[in-house]
Image (cartoon, rainbow over all chains, first blue to last red; front, side, top):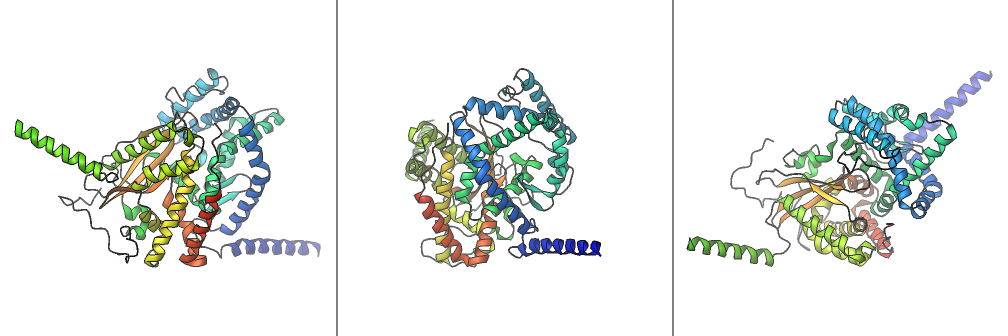
Length: 282
Length: 215
């Protein structure tokens, strides 16, 4: 019967896709990236689109458009994100940051001429970049596996699930007429890519494996954003004392710099002799 | 009063000559050291026209003279290599460390040419115990272009004073970011394969001119 053939074809397709995805996992088993095979595929796709479409346009945009226009565009879209950031700050109970974002949005939308000029920033109101994914993370939702989204780039399961919320909270999503909205979305993408041109060039040279480099950098940054950990990492106390084991795990014990040609001693560094025994507890 | 004055003068003189004689060695607190290096590098980068224009040789020279003496690249390499470090022979460790250092100098020197005049660095206070051997120094770069950029350092107190062994930009630690790259390469082609790949990349980078900043 026809239905059975269609069903069985679907099953084969799903099995093939799963096999494709799982076969990719045979490379390295990164616990944070169980879908590595699939992700690498999407990453390559994004790369191709970037190389042939987005990057050339962004490069031209950066080189041709006068910088005050670029700043205006950047500020305009940045202003819209302040509104959603305010909501998320408040959802996380961060009253001061939330009020700062609201104030930023109000001042920049009015005196800053619809957000084209960022008056609030130089006036002392810092920009936060909260989104729904961070709010969920703040309330304990784990990030889940690493995901590369088509065209949108690196994300995590939690942040992807939060995307519809972020889209709804983005004022520009509700802009009518639709063609203006689409043009704006395109311009915003170009603006973002232009601001990342230097960083992407650096990654080109610095990374041996761009995918892994971007993944590992992204996951750290995302975690840091959720924790608002700009001021300290989880392994360090607020006074600045660093717990090497917490930061680097079992491999934290490295020897001192090896002399040229000399055998490398593997004993832990014993050069510091504090006058009083250092307290162990934080 | 006189003997004390003489004592103070002698001690200061001794300290001054010691500091002059051993230029890269700092007896200062780690955050003071980082602040000093940071200010020194920023001032040089901002005031030197060639560096602003992207002169590669000058930038690398700046990195080698003002930054590298305070960075423990061997420790950085060891941490990035993780458990593979102990499996490497001393010769491999030396080569790996050299190639990694070269890679870092080539790639991250480019970032220095992008420092603009209105970028200011703000340091968070460090209250670590003087007996602490491993510390984290936090700062952020405030520029007129967008949100502040987190820039944190991890330092270790060795026999030659405090040295940086890890750097965090925008939330990502350098060592952590390279761990995956290193381990997957070593798993595929061994430590020698990693060294070869780094060497090849360095050759590529040596031939590339540093791009001049847009503004």
